[in-house]
Length: 169
Image 1 (cartoon, one colour):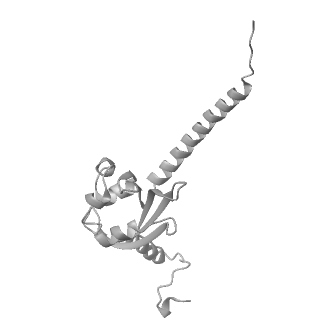
Image 2 (spheres, one colour; image 1 turned 90 degrees about the horizontal axis):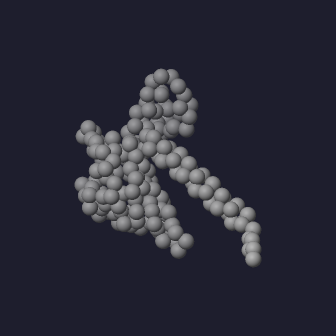
Image 3 (cartoon, rainbow, N blue to C red; image 1 turned 135 degrees about the vertical axis):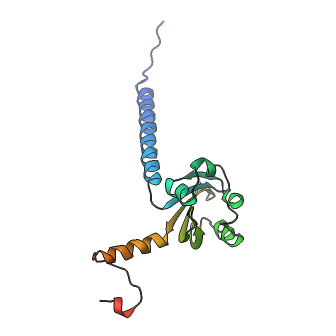
């Protein structure tokens, strides 16, 4: 008695799964490299506020190592930076309001006062429940310094309007 079965479809499906896993892994590596090397501060948090990822710029801004932040909750770990008003704003993120922006004054590791724009974007599951937040912070002082430097070098800056009549050409 001989029993045979064609397992070609099964082998093809297994191959496709392996290829998909490889491609997802490569994509994740590219994304991590991209996020890690941003000049903006980048943080990924679980919905409860526990940090899952922080990039180099974030660590450098606060003068701490990555391990200091991962797994900590910004609501309790950084009370001097995030007051109740900010936390309430952050907690207002919902499926109908997936992004918020705010501006805060923070002191960096050199004790320099910096104006920071925070953009928080929520990611949702199939039930429209937030499972993760991407937080990107831009140092507005750095932007202004770059614009000022560019102007001093004689490079035209397009799209910047200070509101002063003498700056408009």
